[in-house]
Length: 40
Image (cartoon, rainbow, N blue to C red; front, side, top):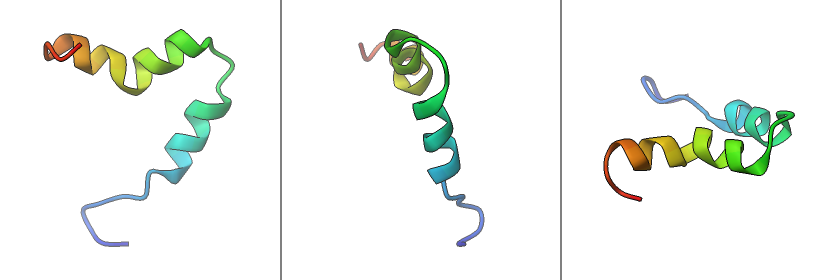
């Protein structure tokens, strides 16, 4: 691993299998940040 960068595979796998709606998954993954920073 190249510090300070981390492998996000575990986090990506978690969000994909989390028992949440697709809409909530999108908000968590990128939608909330896009809305906060005015990009969507």
